[in-house]
Length: 64
Image (cartoon, rainbow, N blue to C red; front, top):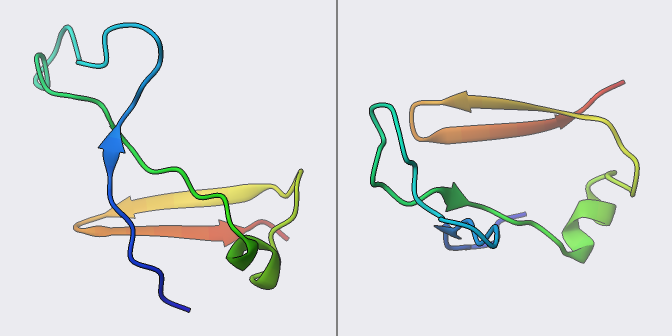
């Protein structure tokens, strides 16, 4: 399954920018996934997951 999405800023009710470190002043990026494709892919409420970050790739896998 392929679903085009857009990264947005993290709207956490406070400053959505980093205040220190090498990313100071940059917006905090956020990706929120809520759709039926999670169920079709075997993810249910309470599922434990593992998230791996790489160069231009994010891999989300369900823990066994």
